Length: 354
Image (cartoon, rainbow, N blue to C red; front, top):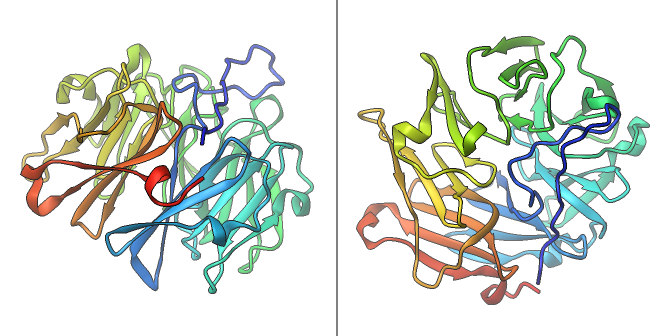
């Protein structure tokens, strides 16, 4: 199995969606969907294969399961997915199709997945570029850049998420690219068009926070929900960190390698370093110091695209990524026995994925 590779190009035409430039293999990354309230010990990882089919693996009670059969009813011309963080139905995501339409996908009570063409109900234009899923007032929403790079929000208007509206985000500073980073609390971070420094937009209230002294944001970042720290890739393939004291050079603080992908994580940050090795940065909760580690496991091949980080009930860490062989791989460690290191599994080859 090989996965789709979408090449991102900087847009010179003002009517073309401006794209983030760090990772030219946006589709070569899996995404975490989340967990259900009834089953907090599981999470689902989804990705788009070379045929445009949304597929997934579920991590449940310490084991991986392939869930393609449950997702069989979804359209087969997908190009990108975006988890809806913070929605009441935690197992939900938005899917951008090859024709630019947006599908809202959620897991039903029977375990199957159901899709609704929400772009059609909102009478919206075709979408190009990245989409960012989030919840606004506990209802699912999708942020994206529209015609001419205008920041827009597609959102459900009722509790059943069957009727959606599409509108520009009035008063929001114009973005410089589609590096839209979301939080479960309904906040949206993106680079401002003026100098590329991050803007924080609280969509529920319209409040805007800016960081004019911070370095440019040139790719997708990540937010630690416990500390409200934003980490993102910046110029020179370095990592920038914004906390309550200001902006910092995280590459220098953690003595970390240069970044060659977008970022993923939360309590820990993972990315693909220059050369394809995985990189992980963690913050010591006692000292506040940031440390870098190179998570490796015997038999684990190098990464392509952006890896993701998952933590299962505070006892197991997983990093899931796509490799040069086109397979989805995972490396895992037990937090109670960190000295034992990481173990590797080729999910595509061993969990009955095509």
